[in-house]
Amino acid sequence: MHRFHIDITATVGSRISIKGNEARHMINVLRLSKGDEVQLADGRGNHYLARIENVSKGEADLAILGTATMEAESPVHITMAQGVLKDKKMDTILRHLTELGIVEWHPFFAKRSVPSPVPEKDKARLERWERIARESMKQCGRSLLPEIHPPCSFNELMTLSDRYDEKIIFSETSEYPIDILKEKHCSNHGAVPWVKIIAMIGPEGGFTKEETSVAVERGFSSFSLGPRILRAETASIAACALIQNILGDLGKRVNSHLTVHGTPRCRAIP
Image (cartoon, rainbow, N blue to C red; front, side):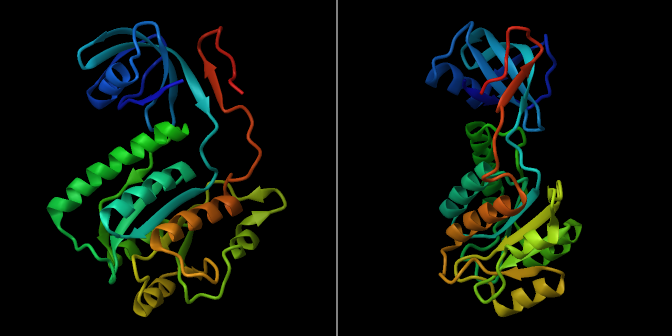
């Protein structure tokens, strides 16, 4: 079933209108029409089953048939802080990190970042990243839209990091494996639910010694991603996958993926 993003929180029995890119994709690309059923996600944790009631040029009216419970969100709150790379690399990283279940994304300008802060470009970057996150959220069946923060400086990120339970910086000079996290946060009953983690990945060329030292002084634990030197975009995806495997739901048994409520004819979809 096709999924679409809406900017409002709906109620069962109500009718809503979808306009803009989502409507054009629904009508012109997918050729959906009156009577077709779709899934809607508001990015705040709510999913809906809806039926198209009417379509017109650039707009679709839908009836909300029921709410839906998705089982696609991780029990661990992961924020990935990425040293700004060349734009196309950032787009790819964000797309895959959204699929892997991040809750926040903090791009920041490190000492070795190739792009430099430019307010006009930063605004355009942010708008594009938000669009990519929405598209990826729909594709992978998530309920929450990751929060995309505007690019900030390394020092600003250090200050922002104080609100997290666990702070990690990945460095090729570190000798410590990340599975140490399992000993710290996991018990016989599994991972501590909804622990808030921020994980930092450097730009091309990695972090400077000074940046690593500053992060460690601010309470970051320095971990390695293994003996091979990874490209920055590979490192970010690998780091997130490892955290999800240790503390999250990657590799865990998956039960019913979607349960729809509010319409008697609807049932759990295996």
